[in-house]
Amino acid sequence: MLRATSKGFRLHIGFFGRRNVGKSSLLNAITQQKVSIVSEVAGTTTDPVEKPMELLPIGPVLFVDTAGVDDVGVLGAQRIEKTRQAIRRSDVGVLVTEAGVWSELEEQLLDELHSHGIPVLVVLNKADLGHPDPEQLIRFEQGGIPYVELVATTGEGVGAFRAKLWQIAPAESVESQVLLRDLVGPDETAVLVMPFDKEAPKGRIKQLQAQSIRDLLDADASCVVVKDGGLKKALGNLKTPPRIVVTDAQVFDKVARVTPDSIPLTAFSILLSRLKGDLVEQTRAALAVDSLRPGDKVLVAESCTHHPVEEDIGRVKIPRWLQQYVGGSLEFTTVKGRDFPKDLSPYKLVIHCGACMWNRQEMLSRIRECHRQGVPITNYGLVIAYALGILERALEPFPEALAVYKQARLEQMDVSAVSCLPDLNVSSVSVVN
Ligand SMILES: Nc1nc2c(ncn2[C@@H]2O[C@H](COP(=O)(O)OP(=O)(O)O)[C@@H](O)[C@H]2O)c(=O)[nH]1
Ligand code: SF4
Ligand SMILES: [Mg+2]
Image (tube, rainbow, N blue to C red; front, side, top):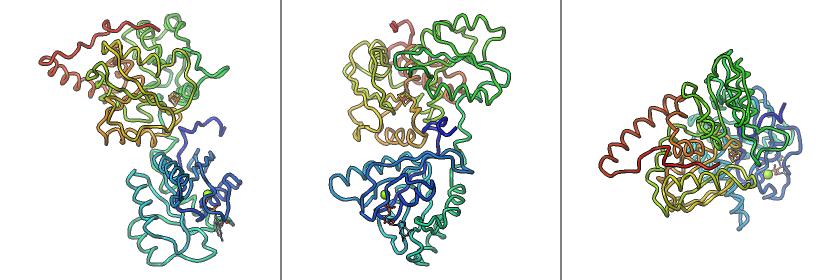
């Protein structure tokens, strides 16, 4: 059961603090396992240690134990950077300290977590050795900062820790994540199109697709799963047309040709933009394709580190479609996992995968960073649909994003009347799959 929940659907709980305060001991006390190495030697935890578990009553969580933020030396700096990355993907932050230790460093960490909108629980560990300064406790109370005293080595206080964690966990919890069950009613049918390319895991279906099936069953809906070649027949066999067709964006064009206009159609990656990212903003950003000129730099970012295959979507298909659309060569840079350039100024557009492996907090933090630097960030499915001229159709199930798209198109047309922007026309892009 535990393995059935992917990392991206777990509430991420990050442990932060200076070295040797007992972060790893706390993780071990909660999980009642030796997950993370505990040592009196400062700097034992290097790369973040992850531990998935079912934490009642919250549900599936991912604990992330980090290196101390006071780490030193070149390696220390690299570890601190990894810790910063862990901050960006945390849904909840646990700031661990010990009696008598609360200084500028803890204040900065608290500010940093709060600046990302992350609720924080302060753990005052090593309560067996001493108690915190009462004035500090008054400051926590006045600032509305929850705290708990604890002895990580014996587990004393872990019950209170769990209860406080539950209180501060964001209401938009893991349990409420909706992939597509709100789009299909009970007794209605969704058709899922999975092309099974060379990237597909052998003998299995992808986590996201399995999650979609589960989501539909939770909605008491039916689900027909087909390969792209079998779609036409499957649609013909259905007595009642499906409520929606959801496809892998790689075969968006083929599927759009086969699916009658009366049946709503979208892509898994667009569902992911709604679930993990910001569909409205990423829709708006897709229109930045029209400002691309030959020679411009485009950053393609993927959250996981799968090995590229011959017809890879991010490296081959999207560049090909975009260059056809723009009518000239573009300069593409592809990054994977957490390698993301700090300086985005060279790029005119960032195109991100659906980030199925990440939680929403991490994807939103990347979107926020792009905003801060003024670079539009869109998503695979959205940009493919735009380049193919089917974005309006793909957004029909999402009224808010559709309205934003239509408005932005109108504004674009006003400008194009003057500056003759390229006409958005599906026939201008010849698609080779
Ligand atoms: N007395 C006492 N020692 C603790 C407690 N929690 C951790 N320690 C000790 O503090 C040291 C550092 O713990 P560790 O979990 O590795 O700290 P981290 O660097 O923050 O991960 C180890 O020697 C632990 O045994 C506690 O609650 N009480
Ligand atoms: S590239 Fe992105 S969307 Fe595709 S499997 Fe990896 S994390 Fe998921
Ligand atoms: Mg540690």
